[in-house]
Image (cartoon, rainbow, N blue to C red; front, top):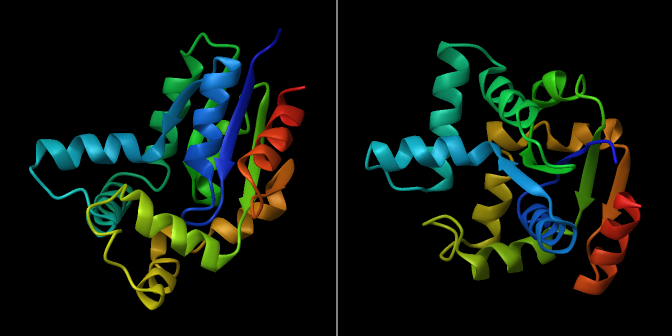
Length: 180
C-alpha cells in the first residue's frame, strides 16, 4: 500500500480530533498536530494552554521566522513517518498545505459542522483551559481570530468535504470511504 496522508481541516470543534482518533484506532494511522509543537512550548514556558496563548505563540513564530515555519515542521515530521496512513490534525491556513501538497499521497479533508453543534462540543470537551466557560458569543468571536480566518477558504482546496452534523456512525462511515 502506498502512503496516504490526510490533512484534516475544519472550523473550531468540527470533529477534526475525533476523525484523527478514529483513523488511529480503526486504521492504525499515526497523527501529527500543528498545536502539539505550540503546546510543548507553552508547557516549557509555564504558560496556560489557552486558545489565546497558543494563537499568540503561532503568530510570534510565524511573524518572526517565516509564515510557513509550522508547516515546515509538520512536513519534516510527516516525511520521516513510516506509517502507511498519516493524519495531520489542525490544518488552518493556505500556507499550511503548501509543503504538504508536495507529499505523494496527500489529501485535504474538510469537516463541516454547524456552529451550534460545534459550540456544544467545545464547552463539554475542555481541550483548552478556557473552553468550558465560553459563551456562544465568545465562541463566535474565537472563530474570527487570525488562526481561524482562512479555514473556510480551505474547503475549496479539499479533496473531500465531510458533513459532521450527524452521529458518530455517520461520520465513521464517511471516514472509512476515504481510506478505501
